[in-house]
Figure 1: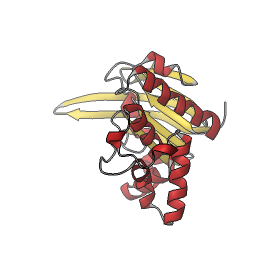
Figure 2: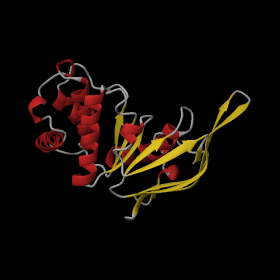
Figure 3: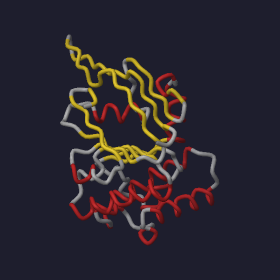
Figure 4: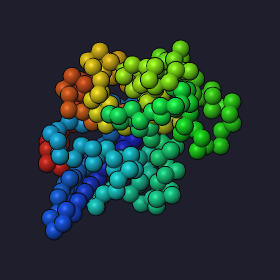
Length: 224
C-alpha cells in the first residue's frame, strides 16, 4: 500500500441531543493510501458522513486524531482550517450546489477567487478542470442548460480546480439516473487512475461502491 494520505487514530464523535449522548463514531482507526478510491458504506446513521466531514475538516471529533498529509486537522483553529480546506480538499455532494446565474466555467472558478492567482491563471485552471471531466464544450452553458450528470461533472470540476490531493464525495450519484451515475463514477475513477487523486466516497449503492479500489463498512459508528 502507498504511503497513507489519511491517518485516523482512536477517533470518536459524540453528539448531545438534550440529555442524551449519541455516538456517531466509536474509537475508529483507519489508514487511507494516496491515490486510493475508498468507498464508505453502511446504513443511515452509521457515521459515514460524520467520518467524511471530519476527514475534510468540516466537522470536529470529540476525541482522537485525524491526520491528512501529516497535518492533524483536529488541532487547527477555524481560520487555519478554512485555509487548509481550500488548498487541500475538493468537495462533491449529492446536490450539485451550482449557482444558476453563473456559467459552468464561472461556477468552477469560484474556489479560485479565494487564491492569489491572476485572472489568466484562474482561466487556465478552469479550462483544465473542465477538460478533465469532459465538458470543455459546455463551459459557457448555464446549469439549466445541462443534464443532471453534466451538472455533477461541473461540480467535480469545481472540486478539482484548486488541484487538491484529496476529493471527498457524499452520495455524489444520489440524484442521478443510472446512466449519468455511471458517467460520473467513471470520471472519479479516471481522476484516481490518471491524476493520482485520493477519493473518499460515501454511498448506499453497492453498484457505485464497486467503482472504488476498496470498500469499508460502518455499523453504529464502528468499522465492520
